[in-house]
Image 1 (cartoon, rainbow, N blue to C red):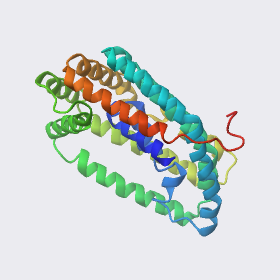
Image 2: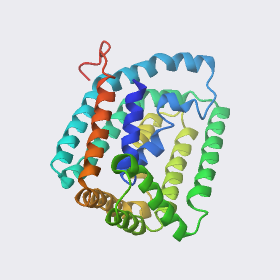
Image 3: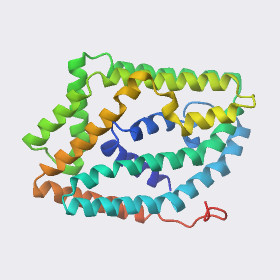
Amino acid sequence: MRKSLLLLLALTLLLGACSRVGLAYRNLDWLIPWKLGDYVTLSSEQSAWLKPRLQEHLSWHCSVELPRYLEWLETSQQALSNRDSAGLAKQLAAFDEAMQRIAVEITPSTTELLRGLSPRQVEQLFEELEKQNEKLREEFLSPSLEQQIARRAERMSERLQPWFGKLNTQQTREVENWAQSLGAQNEIWLANRLAWQQALREALEVRRGDDFEARMTALLQERERFYTGDYLARYEANRQAMAELIVDLIEQAEDSQLERARKRLDGLHSELAAQQCQAPDGLAGR
């Protein structure tokens, strides 16, 4: 069941690199209950409380979400076979919906778990987040802007390689143009991440209060409310740039590249199909 989530993550590395999906995972990955333990040492009581709820989340994801991913792959396969690049670009919107459903699913248990954190655990959480932020600053902000753009193009080329193999000259140029169009997005993205974390810190300071649930619901399910002005101003343009890049890559793809991409989609479909499971009691109607 966890494998299906990991496969979705793999897809977002390609298709959601600069979309809301990417932001959602970068902000939500540690809040999904089985990731929180990577940041906070849970007590035995907290771990015992979490275990059955974790199983329920995984069962929900496997039973309810997995069929949607299979349908997404089938639609993508058809669009790829027809060289429907615009149709493939539209598939990005489906990830927004998937991330929102996951956020809604995990909100109650995440809120309850965070409400019960001790002062030391909250301190530990932000210490770990700051360590991660420092690594991100080193990797994404310490290089010059020119180097940031070049590395952005390199990362995207690496993500595309399993799908297309070696990019042709036109595709390489499109990736470079896309990377250039984002400019100083690294700084804007990290500032936005820090703003969301600050809102989380403020919520945790009053986690015993009556409005904590509402605060966490907003943080998890209404993330746009916490975008910085700079991030919000660039969001739609960056999203459009990503969609246009996908269109251009498909239109300029050689037949052998499309065949490679089709085989990869087939493989992902087979792996996801093998993960199908039975919904536990109470999930069928959710």
